[in-house]
Amino acid sequence: MNIAAVEYFRETGRITLDAVWIAEFFAGGGLEEDHPQQDLMAFHALVQKALLRNAAQSAREGSRDEDDFR
Image (cartoon, rainbow, N blue to C red; front, side, top):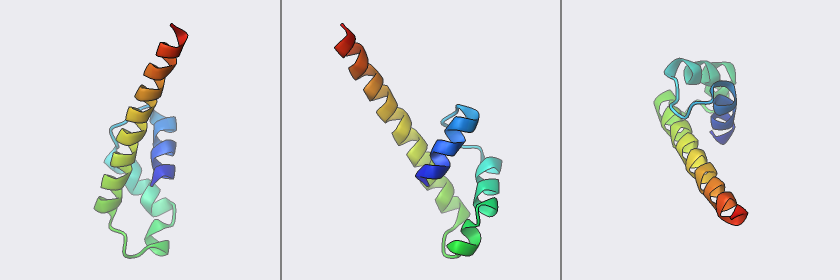
C-alpha cells in the first residue's frame, strides 16, 4: 500500500486518493489475483491512510529543517 501511496502522490501531487485511480491500480497491478482476500475498499482505506501519514511526516521533517536553518 505504501508503494501505491508513493506512486499516486508522484503522479498527482495530491493526498486525497481518487477512487478511479486506486481501482485501476488495484486491478492493473495484479492485486486481485495475488491477494484475493484483499477488498478494494479496505485497500483504498489503507492507501489513503498511508498518504496522510506520509504527508504528516513530510510536514514534520520540513519544520525540523526550517528550525535547523535558523
